[in-house]
Image (cartoon, rainbow, N blue to C red):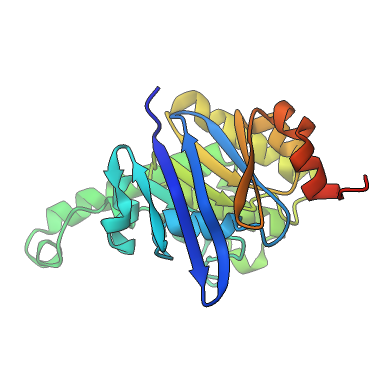
Length: 255
């Protein structure tokens, strides 16, 4: 099957530090692809390259056959790529509903002139937005807190809001950067169930960074392992956990 996302020999440097070296990875449509590795392995840098937040020194990144390294960062969402971050990007004083609604703006095709001269188009988009937001709130079990400011929510619920904001744009590729960090076991179960539901009703493809290998074993179809900016293993979760290079990277040569 033709990859939805194809990364070929990507290298990134920051000053004299090589963050990624000749990284290659292919993500099959409709799968969950895990990205793991020790701290400093270059995982977030790779997501930043896909998101166009950093420009690689060399290599190529293709999304659905399109070279996205020639695109502007603000065009990426329009291609069907959504992203969550390790640190919250939520607006604290906004309600859950309004934060999720912010994720829908990339689907708005109207121009500023339309807002003033064609209010019926704006009103139609608003109705469409409200309907889609409600659908996503229901899918992520956030309806009961939809009108509460996110600043008053638990850590786990704020993570769920950020996930919902990414999903409301109906992306084809969702990049999740440490969505399980700081979550309790019930929160991780909720996240896993949410991702499973979305995969059942859509062709969503997911790339997820996490340090929780048990969670990854439950949700991932394939896993790529980075260490010091290089790919050291590819395969199913079971294959990767048995890989000698992965064992050395995580628990040391002596072990």
